[in-house]
Amino acid sequence: SYDLTQPPSVSVSPGQTVSIPCSGEKLGDKYVCWYQQKSGQSPVLVIYQDTKRPSGIPERFSGSTSENTATLTISGTQAMDEADYFCQAWDRNTEAIFGGGTRLTVL
Amino acid sequence: QLQLQESGPGLVKPSETLSLTCSVSGGSITISTYYWGWIRQSPGKGLQWIGNIYYSGYSYYNPSLKGRVTMSVDKGKNQFMLKLNSVTATDTAVYFCASYGGPSNSEAFDIWGQGTIVSVSS
Image (cartoon, rainbow over all chains, first blue to last red; front, side, top):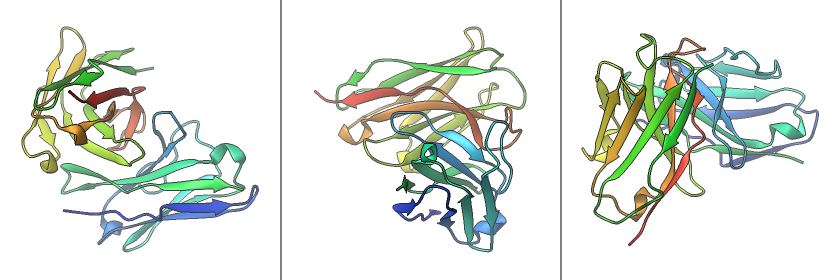
């Protein structure tokens, strides 16, 4: 089965930039999306089709991809961005795969 | 704005069938671009996709659930349902219904329900 790998945790100081990687075999051939999940809440889509932001998502959230890695970048990180972040892609267009999630701590 | 709301028993006995319903409001379940799905999250863990269904009944499931999953649609009630049989303690999780093909017009889950906690215990 297809796997997506994320670091369990990352930390950042307020106002700084943080990047969260998501790796998978030939991930660059698939569309990747990213979800933010705050404690006790449902996930919220923050990036879709690798780089696009849904309406209402701040510009400080951006996405990028390379051959085997997708990256979520948060610029000018704010305390409200502290959350778990999950990447997701489709395998063979019929199976949704989630990464294990990365806990972002804003110190 | 489309909204989703899960409902169902919060406690299921081992070996029995977990049954959940997701009610769709603010729009029709027959909107041609939408696919409806279930995703779960075990306590303190990540997200696991369970499956998706289209209003026509076309469905596809996570192979790791080994044929225990069935989804269905009730167009008259604007609802879609999940059945997971032969449950064990490992099926204890928050179950979310979600959809894609909506506002983002993509295969990303852009609408989520609030989630419902299901515990498997005797």
